[in-house]
Image (cartoon, rainbow, N blue to C red; front, side, top):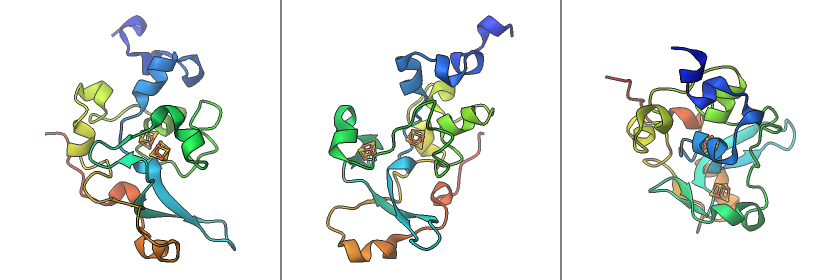
Length: 158
Ligand code: SF4
Ligand code: SF4
């Protein structure tokens, strides 16, 4: 395959992408929308299985995407400039993969052509997360999980 036949994410650097290309890279896994707790002593971050109140768990999409940063003050701003700093992004995150020089996986909707493949492959939070709504602040630590990208066995490509 010649260079021009390559998909945009292989041809272009992250900071060369159009807004639409950038947005299309999000696989819709919802992993970055999990609540995290920080150990005050070590600054280590712990993921929980609780999702931001704005995440629609069924679709793993933000229910107020346009206003997400004003609606939720600690919603992560993922850009070509910040992706390296956001070292808690899951190893499966398309932005992290490309920033590290890797390629997208087979289940990424841009590769599979199917927005469901991220769920069917067991990558998304859809089948095991629960909303933060209604969980008292002092009970959030009960929901800490070890590795958010491995909550469900992944289905390998057949
Ligand atoms: S972890 Fe990355 S790919 Fe998954 S929803 Fe968040 S930004 Fe999108
Ligand atoms: S505001 Fe939307 S994009 Fe941001 S963490 Fe919450 S659900 Fe995710």
